[in-house]
Length: 78
Image (cartoon, rainbow, N blue to C red; front, top):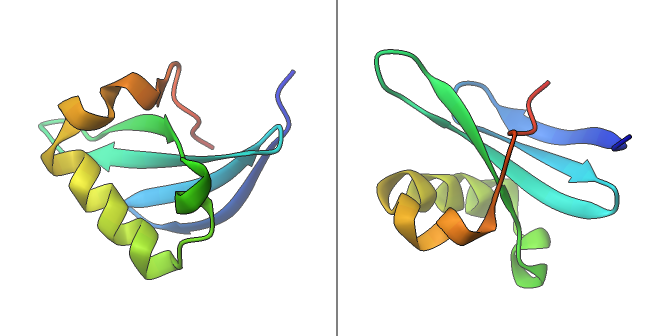
């Protein structure tokens, strides 16, 4: 079983989690139904500020294909 701890979130935008000693960002993709997608962070992204994580979430939404290889399924969402 995975040990999941929410670090912080910005409602309806993203949440940052620690999952078994790895950092994961879950981004909410808006559509007719909002849906979450989770991505493993790179080491350099783990120490980002909350504002930097917000910007990363925006980049992921705008360019999903560039981050698709880091996607975790099913998404981490609590």
